Length: 143
Image 1 (cartoon, rainbow, N blue to C red):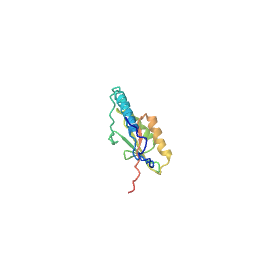
Image 2: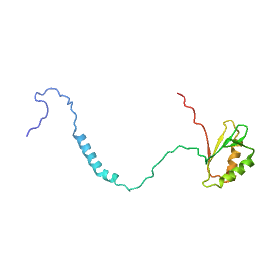
Image 3: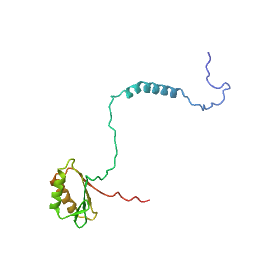
Image 4: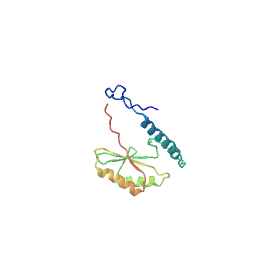
């Protein structure tokens, strides 16, 4: 059995340019063992039947009621003018008792006062309409 204590000729000490990979291999083996032990725990979960999502665009059907409000405050029921809010309330009450209840889509002019659109929402509420939506235009995308 022999031990090497340095260069044989007693010359200058030389720098060793190799990397000792033994600690690296030890760490990798420990990590491999940890992953092999913990992976079965991670994959063992409670079986759950998750719901599927469906993204359907909104389509305007004849059952929907389109209410348009101009910037002057004029009201239109499916492109037909309505005299005033009392007449709109009567039409809404008649529509609210149908089964299934129709959706009301409100299209307010950009320059219309909030008061005009707010009154239409109040009329819908008083008539018992439960589903109200606002129709807007998407912003223009510049190319």
